[in-house]
Amino acid sequence: MTYIEILIDTSGSMGAMKGTESENQFLLPDGKTRMSLIKNTLREQLLPTLDYATKITIRTFKGANTQEQLPIVEKIYEGGYDLNLMMNKVGELPDDPLGGTPITAAITEAVNSLQSIPNSDRKIILLTDGEETGGGNYKDTIDKAFSTHGIFCKIFIVGICQGKEAEEKATYLSNKTKGVYQNLIPKSANDTNYISVKLAPLKKAILQDSLKNMKAATVAVTPQPVVTSQPKVESPKVIQTIKEKIETVKQESKQAKSVVQFEELELRIKEQIANGQTLLSELSALKELLRLNLLHESGIDATTLTIDSEYSENIRHKSETFLYTHLCQFHGTSKVKWMNQNGESGKPHDFELFDDVGKTVQLVECKGTPKDKHTFYLTSNEWQYFLTNKEHYQLYRVFNVDGQPTPVCIENLFASIIGGQVVPYLLKPEILKEGRVFLTLITST
Image 1 (cartoon, rainbow, N blue to C red):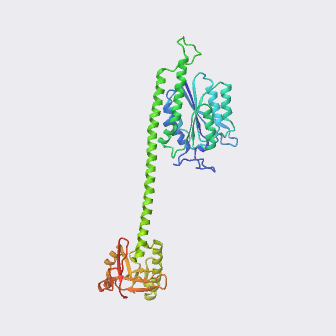
Image 2: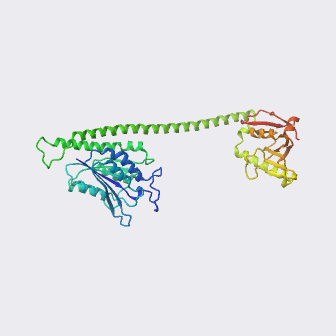
Image 3: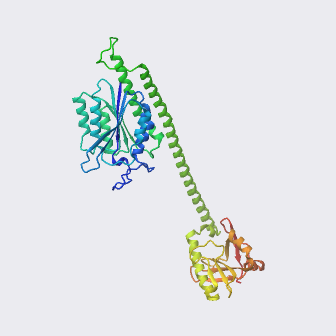
């Protein structure tokens, strides 16, 4: 006969600890509580494997939310194997409990219950995220139970995100009773594959322990008339069921492990791809830098490739600021609108000039240069906009932006191109960015 005590930690750290200094500090990475992980673990991993048990008792334990932290151990289920009822009872547990962790009190309660059923397959399954905070000492409790009552039962512990000190004590307790300890630190409460792989050794050990105890009881019975003091022998059918359960756990563990390994492999491949892309980008940049250095040494201009965005913005702002002052002095402030006065507007021109009645008469584009370069560039969008508005499209080339700026007005860009004052060719070799139209001012207009 198999008797199982399941002890569930319902202390404060199993929840969000709302309203305390530790609020939300113990949540899982997905924002769920540790209690939600315990509930999923019981319903999906542990309870379905215990259908051979004669009796299952489920208890919760916590410290009263008072200064004394008195232990509270409550029985929420006791009886034969009724999976639906047990799942419902577990599902009703609060996700946000409060209180301490009186592990000793919970173990004492379970041991006192188990001592009334000698010569049976007995075990305790403990699910907790902490260590003793109820003032007791579960090491002494276990030693006393073994020596005084002659009780021996293995304790199997499922740790929930336990720290080093709690791990050491849980390991001692499981080793002392020849049980198994597993600490779950999942990314989410529903990380089924991870949990399945981690719990496989513990589930297998629970089943094998029951199988061993049942076989031992079978061997101990002789073919004499049944005596009431003799233990009840489990039927071969129950033993076969446990064997099948063990095989199922093995298969589920292999499958889950394969999935986890695949996910880890997929993550490593993604990281390698990302690292490879970064490396390729760096190599491409180095290659481009080397090419530009070679071009520079050969006398080939690569201005539009080498000017960085910050430098380009600096030139734009300086040249437009200068030209705005120049236009206001020439036309009057009320007749000049600076499109980028409060930052880059994204408009395909930089200024608008108005007549006396407020009608737009000129669209002005500003092209600055740090020195005296006569070639300037229009983006593909600026070029299309110029062609659409060629009758009143004016362009200023502002030379020596970093020194004493000098403006040259191309009164009508289209007319200047037709007249030959602005030509669509370079005066020397250049390397340009894509989507650029290059024009060169031949003479001052």
